[in-house]
Length: 389
Image 1 (tube, rainbow, N blue to C red):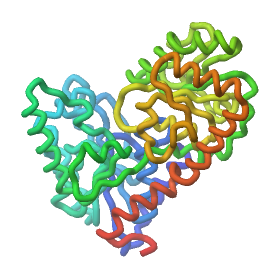
Image 2: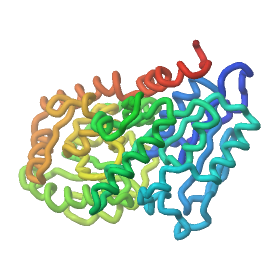
Image 3: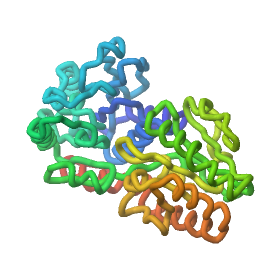
């Protein structure tokens, strides 16, 4: 976070003729978790194109103070006041795709003061939808609504889909996290913007010193998909692994993760000051996630650090066309198969090193900040003057 603050300080030094972008998100650009990592990678890419201001519309129960170059809008005083489109209570009725008038008013005020050349928003449509009337606007739809909505009346879902498409039609480009999402959205310019972790670039190379038979899972268990995935792994896969590899152990790190400690072979911490030792001591990184939105940034991070990965098909799908199952990671659906893939990697040094090396090579080419920079530059630069043009 200390390094990030230097980036924010740069925001006040506008060159006068370079474009200025308003970046709207529901969370602050910050390393360490999926939403923050994605926001940070986009923010870094935009900074290389123009001067950037950040407008944060946090969740109802999050109170934060603005930093240099930031604006904060606290829409709701308490979680129980959340409207249906907001946060976990979002239900995707028709109004969920319309601009929130409070955000529209705030953006118009900022635009009057700073004359923004463009607007870039992390998905929620109510935050960013009103910007399309003010200038070229771009939206990152990392959560596709059709993944979570359902109705007993098919016609209602079809109507919702059409309203969603119409709302997106006002944007110049729609970004999604993975290839499979392209078929769920209708727009003239859809681009895949992969999820990456910004930490490997700052940490540097991780030496493969994992001498113990340790497996690693990173991710807060406060998130239901994480909790369900790791609980299932501990109950149904870990015993089979330890039957074949008696000294195998699972290390779990993340918010509220201590709650999973207790079973044989499991150690957990809610927080560690440095993740590098965790990766260094791990031979295998597991990603047993079976549901959720977006893509699992933990998988991209493990690949960038050069670790052998075992993932579910759902988790691997987030990096379809980038990380190839069988070459860059091992993929398994059933609990027994997942355990068997872990056993293979723990026992076979040659296989583990080959998978890890392949993953790191691909991540260095396609899951890094340079990739994000180029994808965003290609989309944004036709619509405004950017640095280097």
